[in-house]
Amino acid sequence: MNFDFSRSQSMAYALAPDHPLPHSIVIAGTNGKGSTTAFLSSLLQAHGLRVGTFTSPHLLEVYERVQINGKKIMSQDFEKAGAIVMQTMQSLQLTCTYFEAVTFMAWVHFAYTQPDVCLFEVGLGGRLDTTNTVARIGSIVTKIDLDHMRFLGENTYAIAKEKLAICQTGAINIIANQDPLAQKAVDETAATGIDFRQEGQSFTHTGRSDHFSFCNQDIILPPCPLGLPGKHQTSNASLAMEMAYQYLGQYRSQKIDLSKSMRALAATRVLGRMETWQKGSQTIILDVAHNPAGIQALVDTLIQYHPHTSFSVLLGCSADKNHKAMQNILASLTDRIQTTAFDHPRSWHTNTGVSLDYENVEDALLSLSATAAQTILCTGSIFFVACVVPILQKHAFELKTTI
Image (cartoon, rainbow, N blue to C red; front, side, top):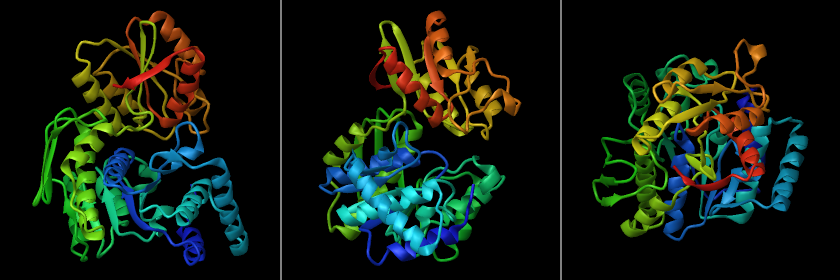
């Protein structure tokens, strides 16, 4: 990966004068960025705002990354934004990476369409991420865990330092509860004059995803279900609630409506999270968990919602992930774990020293479907899940619901 932040800075300086962004919020963290973004978008839309979202990576098509009120950018608008970004690159004699280019295309699109507020999900880390060039009124940092250590550091303290760099003095900075090492980084950052509103201190939440409640110094949200299942989603929902409360009050002179908030949280969905696909009596669950912490949250959720279900697992990981730890966690769910390569440059393969059961996703799925009486869980990577979806569609599986 090419982390030359000066390239992103040059592009931002060139684009900003003619393409001013609306109010913007940047979301970082190891896991939960996409879910928190989705919860916050739903909450703000429920209060009458047009909300732009930039997320990554996409599951099926690049247009998913740039949305306004849940509607993907049109191809012609994507091309128009791309032309402006390309012209800017040429004028600066720069060559951007794919992620950098699409981030700035979202910037240009939001500048032209002017939603009320924009949510930018960090791609990797924070300090050197292209989204860190966005002028923001707020930042959210979700739970920090071990991932991308080659680029971000070997422990949660080092990783937290990278991610906390999106937080700014004078902005609304909302942060999840952290482990002691990451918390040390939070405390050191706070000592520089950056104020945080942290989960468990400035606001709290209780319950599970089917019975979530939230409170801060001013409001108490009655128990309600979340549209995204799993106990880990209660933290993500609480971060979104606190940001919505602070943003609406400080920038919109608007009180948060608890009834609207409850409906918004219950209606939130994210592609690739706990999706259930069915064909006759065969059930396949898809989830984009892609690191040990994400896999642990997935296993906990499946045990909670399907305590009597027998699972077979089809695991597809990116080559740089801690696949051994992921397999060990999945072993607490089932001993029926099969592994497969998938059609993506980041896929693990036998030539990377990993012994796989299958080299082809379709062969793996058809084999498991023919022999497994149990529910099949496909997980390990968003890129793997993206390969699974069209195969399920081809073989007449239908998407039923989440979890």
